[in-house]
Amino acid sequence: MKTSDNEVSAQANAREARVKADRPAEAKTSDNEVSAQANAREARVKADRPAEAKETPTFLLDGEEISFTPGQTIIQAATAHGVYIPHLCWHPEFKAHGSCKMCTVKVNGRFGSSCTMAAQAGMTVENRTTELDDKRRTLLQMYFVEGNHFCPSCEKSGNCSLQATAYELKMVSPHFDMFYPDRAVDASHPDILLDFNRCIMCSLCVTASREVDGKNVFSMGGRGLLGRRIHISSESGKLADTDFAATDRAASICPVGVILPKRKGFAIPIGERKYDKLPINRQVTEVTP
Amino acid sequence: MNAPTPPVKKLRVATTSLAGCFGCHMSFLDIDERIITLLDLIEFDRSPLTDIKHCGPCDLGIIEGGLCNAENVHVLREFRRNCKFLVAMGACAINGGLPAQRNHLDLRDVLEEVYQTEVGLSHGGIPNDPELPLPLNEVHPIHEVVKVDYFLPGCPPPADAIWKLLTDLLAGRTPSLGHGLMHYD
Image (cartoon, rainbow over all chains, first blue to last red; front, side, top):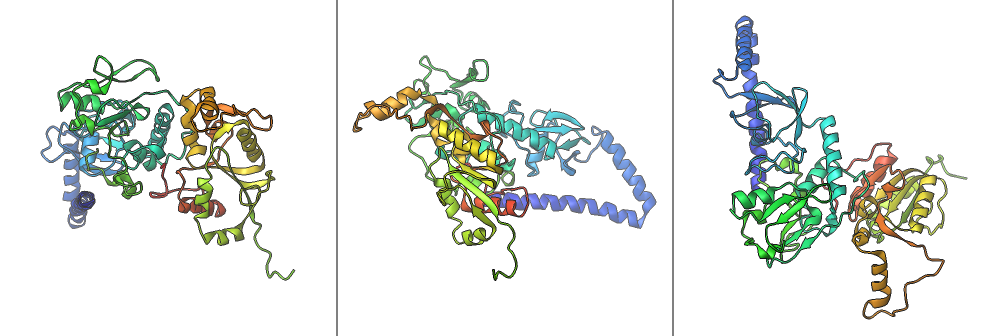
């Protein structure tokens, strides 16, 4: 909670600083309009040639000026400013996967994934528009019908990124017909339970196991909506027959309720969990999970 | 009649629980004394609260639970025919919920286990009375069968969320649940 409070105030400070930065320009106009106009023109010329500009480059995100360091993606710059762009498969610790499409924004009028698109000076980015949020809600509804997301029985409920994103986008129904796919549960490991009913194929476990743990326990395979799944890299296909450990980064990376520690159910009661307290758009800079 | 001014015409509301546990109806009763305020504004048609068996023309129908047998589908269609607006209340009505967890099992296996093979039961055989509605192979949410106008998620939806939906509708607003009232669990 402390962290999130600090972040909220940090966001407020950043916004204040931005407002202050705007004020001197207004003052100048009243003092000496001619020179101010010249300055403004100069500034505009500079903004057109970001490579030559010495000041921090910026772009517009829903009308708000966001500064960035060259090389940052749109979602990285937004997150650093405490601005929420809905996302599922993106995680600040890892290279973007670009598969969930939840972070789709409109850049200068064209759709693009904000997790893979580099921020460019002067670009105009639309994020939380009705049009984009409607599309994101439809995507979420597809995620919910193609898996078995039965929140009332899920230990991740309240800490789940998929659920919190659906709350944020006001998804009240799955809209489409349910698939109720048959998906396996793997309870073979002594410390970790795998419930693939909830998998959204974000591949974060694959990446974390490979890049952080150096183990390569998970991989993506299969074809088609119901054939495609996460595979376990062992002869038997069981997690118990891998060198997976509860201390692995991959054991805590799952944004939904697939990879869960055993014997820790409901340690924090429903109603007092992360997204019960504050909506996901107020916990932007907090690394999840 | 000595009534000073004729009251505003009350909205007629019907409610039912299909493949649900009545938990949503219990949560509805958790609006506590606000139900007195509510009864100035609405009157109940078919509902577990009135025990009226069939639904007449209503302004609002509230459905708890999904569809697990033929009778559920029949009742749902009766509600849709008679109600101007239909609300899916709770997880089961919205996505099948707990009863839908049987969708991964063969229906015959489930019935055999419950009525024949399970230890401690009377082994009387699978009930086959013509009065009993036939179970569906799979449990499904109600929006797959009829058009649903509003959804109220939660297992159960908190009383405050039910109150918000009802007061929004009574005031002629599109219902909207903010943070804290929108829950899937």
